[in-house]
Amino acid sequence: MSRFSMVARVDARHEVAEAEAWIARHQEELTSVSQGGCGCCVRTWLIEGPRELVDEVPAAISASTDWDRD
Image (tube, rainbow, N blue to C red; front, side, top):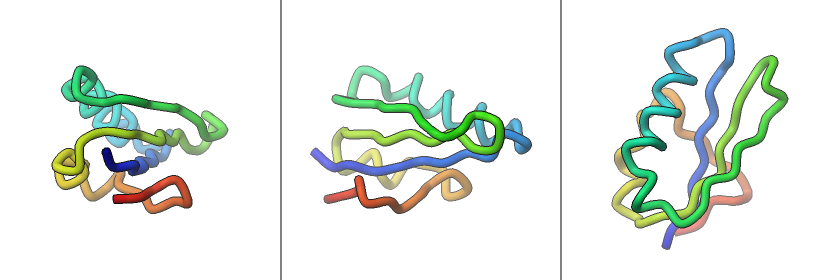
């Protein structure tokens, strides 16, 4: 399993919607999803799942954090 992150700016509604849609599409394949961020400016997700899903995260919401690992 890989760990990877997503971040969406709240004022860019399409980013939040894109992240939520991605998670919903892959929910059955993910072993862990933790949501964070302040909620007023950004929303973040720390995700664990199959390595091949990392490549499917839209570039605009892909993030790199200390959580990530291959």
